[in-house]
Amino acid sequence: MERSTNININEADVVFRQLYGNDPKVIADQKTRYAEAIEEFYRIFPAYKSSTGSENTAISIFSAPGRTEICGNHTDHQHGRVLAAAIDLDAVAVVAPNGMQKIRVQSEGYPPIEVDLSDYAPRENETGRTGGLIRGVAARFVARGIDVPGFDAYVTSDVLSGSGLSSSAAFEVLMGTIVDHLANDGKLGPVEIAKFGQIAENQYFGKASGLMDQMVSAVGGLVEIDFADPEKPIIDTHQCDLEAMGFTLIVTDTKGSHSNLSGEYSAIPEEMRSVASFFGKKYLRDVEEEAFYEALPRLRQDPSIGDRAILRSAHFWDDDRRVHQEAEALRSGDLQRFLELVNASGRSSESLLQNLYCTSTPQIQEIPLALMLSRRVLGKEGACRVHGGGFAGTIQAFVPKAKVDEYVKTLEAVYGRGACHILKIRPSGGVKVF
Image (tube, rainbow, N blue to C red; front, side, top):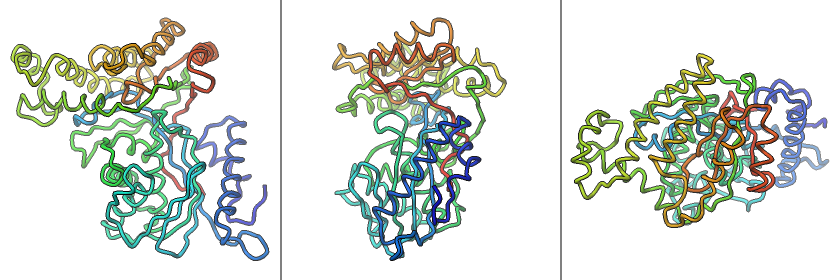
């Protein structure tokens, strides 16, 4: 489709390959998606059209990916390490400056949002709402002395909400990338954009979260992050082509409800902190592992701790160590070692971290069932583990190419058509596409 805008989608094959891979059908689908997003932008914001109906404003298009956690299950909140990857599902925004003190965003399938840039304080009525994320990100730029221009945006995202692939982080990074390019020539960089997103989620949206999701979405690729100092995380990026190694990454949504899980989630860091506190520390990262094991008899005598907290703490050290081991295995091309470590991480989450199902409803175990089915299909090949926070939601599997059809058929027979998401690792994070 030829357009009178500043963007020629038909001649952008190289750009689309960088973001979405080399499959011609995928590239064609993405071109259609972008063209439809542009059309929708002009439909929603008709002021950008001239009296003759032609588009008379130079637009920009931005993209930020979702992410998949690969190792480091519940390690980041203890200042540990994580291994995660940006994926080829993303949030895309068509954007134009509006010359006002307002950010107006229309996300596909949602009501329009307008954020007044004359006020950057958190608002109670934006808690848990997208407007809070937008205002929070903008506020961080202003705190850095960067004026935020008003803009209009149409956003479409295929990072499914509630899928464990971090749709909220993709949106936060998308907003940060837009503002950085419109106001700051893209100089801020992905690490600071990620921090801005986390602050917006914590202080404006009202959800406690670590920095992993935003960091991976902003940086892109396969990312090993050390949160020993969360203000200055150590980031090591890798490139990884699982397809070339003969495996496909699949995340399966088990369709479990995330409602009423806040107590289950918060209990994990609380119990780990109770063990750290026994040693006079705030985080397990600051406790010597050997000291922990030597103190087990005394730990069990402390009524404020309990056996589950001890087991969950043991998981922390094991999985924190596995993060670097998995990254090294991938770097050296030792796929078998990598898969062994993924399986070990999954077993540790199951037996030590104990985040596969809710203790209040033990009869509902979507994640253990999905892992059982996965292991039945994979046999001694591939690997699988719980994905993300756990208790409900998604599992992750590394499936040999020859077994992909069987795997999807088996899992979707139980969890429904479309439950399995075949993913690729995306080398780039939040970017200006055009």
